[in-house]
Image (cartoon, rainbow, N blue to C red; front, side):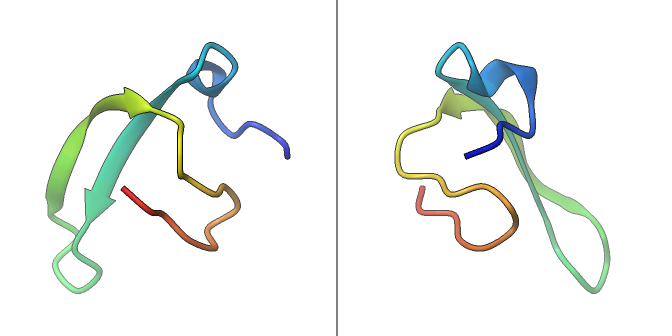
Length: 45
C-alpha cells in the first residue's frame, strides 16, 4: 500500500470529505489511519 499523504506513515491521515456536486467540504480533520483504504477505493470511518 502506497501512502498518499505523509501523515499516513506516522499512523495519522488528513481527512477531507467533499460533496461531489457542490464541491463543499463536508468534513476536514485528522484521524488515525485504521480502517481506511487508499487509492480512492473505499473509506471506512
